[in-house]
Image (cartoon, rainbow, N blue to C red; front, side, top):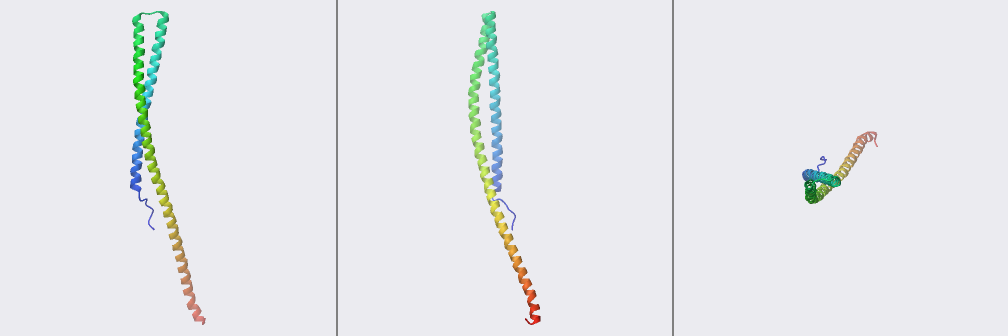
Length: 159
């Protein structure tokens, strides 16, 4: 019997390559999202530091110019945070969309793997049947040869 060969092996290989490529894309998108989150944290920390600095200057007394500088920095940080929040929302949507693509590609690969397992099981069953048939033929042949080899001896005895 021929060795087992999965009939859709080339397609399975292609789909695995597609899955790997989609996973890499997902990894890049998640990294981008993580970088945006890091920028948001840095901006929030900066804004908080400027608000604290402004409060301290107000209680200790300072010039209006210094307070305006602090206020400008706080407002600018807030604008940057709003921009980053929108950028993060878009990146999160891209990650989610890519995740769905990866799930679909993974399901495609999985279905082919299950099909391969099923075909391999069927192959093993057929191989087992062939082995049984060969064994039966061997036993029958041995019985026929042993019977044929005894008959001349019996004929010589007059039986």
